[in-house]
Structures are given as structure tokens and as C-alpha cells.
Length: 330
Image 1 (cartoon, rainbow, N blue to C red):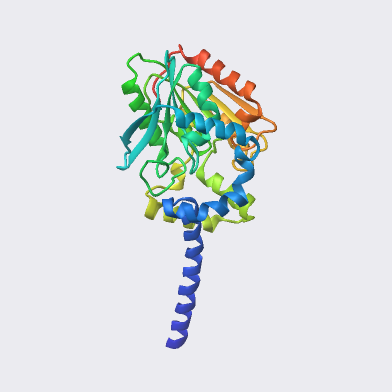
Image 2: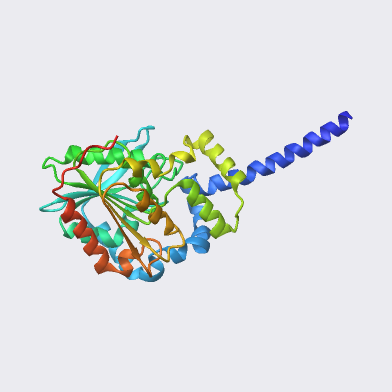
């Protein structure tokens, strides 16, 4: 009897280890972001799942020209401390005769010079001083874990107050995010922000980490029943990364936010399903507009329909630069 119990315990231990190991592998792949791990793993991940959604796939010339323009600019290094003690970095590019500040919040494992490569020059030439955030564990910012907006939302909030402190002329401030950076901007709108923040721009943002992981599992790995996987992933996020998946969700912020929001999404986006922006747009109680570009993939609306995209940006600024905010989000 004792021998059977020991065998049963051994089988259970092996099964439990395998069960948890699969969840840990998923956690390591999508949440943990040590630089040496990115160098080893990122190549196959991009080739098999993200290449067709990257602007470089169809618009390489425009993308590379935009990055090169960013590199040529004389930018200032800026630093803040996150609420959990990380040293966060950004590049600041002031504009001559600036009319507004725009904080640029890039996407998952991205960079400001990459995600905003094509749009940054246009914004700067139209009197926007730019702050290119390095999200935690990206670029020169510290960090080991990507939290899908759970902690990045507070980083966006801190950068907003940083710019407000530099903003002697009280120029309008806009929070502009792409992909995960857009989700972080939307989540940040549920917190108190400087009164100079006049509006939000969200391009291809997801609604929640849980929903995004479910879509990734189903569309990329053909896993449709992932309740136990989400349980394990959330457990590891709590134990090691210091956040819960439920904190990476835009719903509450969209109910609280009073600032106008301009949403963009590409209809052919298979990285972040367009339904996410439609849901965020529906939940948003502030003045809002959703621009869906039929032929665009992920973050490609500005490339696919540049005149439309730029016209909408300028209209949004013109409509909101001089407006007063009804009250700070709480």
C-alpha cells in the first residue's frame, strides 16, 4: 500500500511539474523580457507570427526613413522613477514654435523610434514637442517584465506629470499610444492627470491582457481552451512580476475618462483584433471617434492612408487644444 502511494505521489508530482512548466514557458515567452532572452527568442517569434503585421513588411522604405530621421535629431535624455523603483528613460525632442506636447507610448517590445518612425516627423513639423518613452525593460529603461499596461499605465501617468513640470507655457499635452502603448494610455486616463492633458490617441490598442492572450493563443497557437493556462500565467505574474492580469484592463478607465479619444485601427490587423478598438470605443464615455482603415494591418493605418491619418490627427489637435477639461480623472 505504501509503495502504491509513493508511486501515485511520484506520478502526481511529474504531472504537476509538466502542468506548471507549460505555464512557465508561456510566462517566460510573453511577460519576461531580459535582453539576452530577447536576442535568442525574438527572431523565430517575429518570423512566424508578427512579420506580416509589421510596417516593414509592406512599407520598409517609409519605415526606415522615419527611423533614420529620429536618429538624426538632437534629442534630450530624460529619466523618471517608476512607482516600483525602476529607472525609466525617454527622449525629448522640443519643437520650435511648439503648440503642444505629445507623449509617445510605444508597443510590446517595441521602441519609440520604431513604432512612431513614420508619424514622428509629421508631428514635429506641425509644432509638436515629442517625448519618446522607452517602456519598462525596453530601450534604456530598466525592468524585467512586460505587464501589458498593468504597470505601464502608471509610467504614462508619471511621464505626463514630468512633461507638465517642463511645460512653462501651459501648452496642451496629448497621450499617444500604439498597440500595448495605446492600451497603457487608455488605462492611464482612469487616473488623475495634469489639467493640460487635452486628449488621447490610441492606435490598435487592446482592451485587456486576458483578452489579448486568449486571441494570441487561439490565432497563433490554435489553443482554444486555455482557462488553466490563464490561471497559471496569472499566478506567475503575481508571484514574479508583481501584477495581476485583471489590472491590465481598459474598461474601468474608459468609464472614468473625461478626455476626448481618437481611436485608430486597421481592419486587417491579425496581431490585435480590431474588435478591441470597437469595444474600447463603445466603453468610452468621453467624446470619441473611431477611424478604421480597411486595408491596414497592425499599426499600418498611417502608412496605408497617410492623408486620412494625418488629417484626423490635426483635426483632433485643433478641436481640443483650447478646450478646458471637465475635471481631472480620479
